[in-house]
Image 1 (spheres, rainbow, N blue to C red):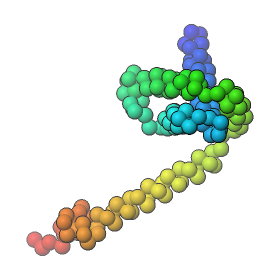
Image 2 (image 1 turned 180 degrees about the vertical axis):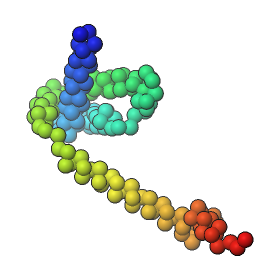
Image 3 (image 1 turned 90 degrees about the horizontal axis):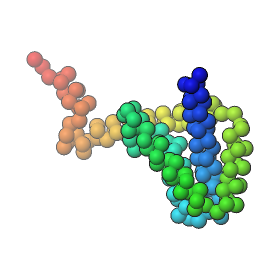
Image 4 (image 1 turned 180 degrees about the horizontal axis):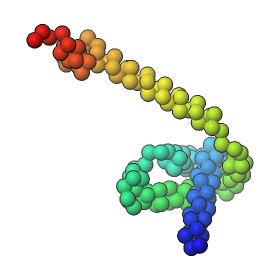
Amino acid sequence: MLVSMKLQLIKENARKLKAQTLAIYYAARDPRMPFLVRVLAILVAAYALSPIDLIPDFIPIIGLLDDIIIIPAGLALIMCLTPPSVMESARLQAQEVAGKPVSYSAAVIIIIIWLVLLWVFARWVLTALNSSQFVQVHPGPLALIRSLGQRKI
């Protein structure tokens, strides 16, 4: 009973944090927002929504400290610096979006785009490793493997 109440409280706090992050994102897009506060809001929202953390989450206890301290502190600072009218309009936009269903097809498209970009980057790196300039200075891993196959024993 006590564990389920704590779990419910954690879920509720996570939902509120997500709603505040979304509101900050919409506030940063508002032209009435001061420029430096807008930049700070974009950085905090990007950090909160990014899967990459300063301290990886798999490190016990310390890995979650950045999520527990940095994000709420950044959100609180931005909320204090944001004009009340901008914050109210951003909260309304966040509530509208939060009620909409998640688009899994959009997630699949984004994943495909990332995979294509990764493939293009890998091809570019392999081409650079096998270029004639690079091979003259350093044969590269593929050239070394080819030369091993051409040697006669």
